[in-house]
Length: 134
Image (cartoon, rainbow, N blue to C red; front, side):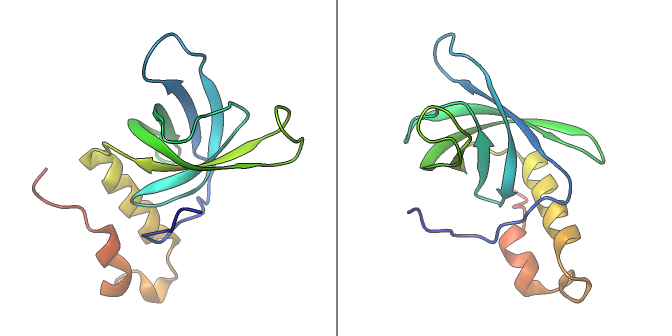
């Protein structure tokens, strides 16, 4: 299993995702982010994805509505109910080209998800700091 490097956030509101292959006319799949972090996320979808392959993710946040296109590599996979070929799958995705706006939205999401006494904590904020050099 892939080792987690940054804290994960379970979104308080659904974050929907469409997934498309970066090469060729591959079919688009749809799903949701079960959790998300600065470095990646867990996508639940019925589309079969290949390990170590890069896909285009169209990620839709709500409240406020915002859409980001991000490349991500599949780093782990797990079958859920329904068995092979017939159920929802969970995939660990590592972001490859997350732009400043996307990272800023993740930092905001993390801040809102933190307990009130940790929102200003340097321990909590440090992993979510967005570099100024972009």
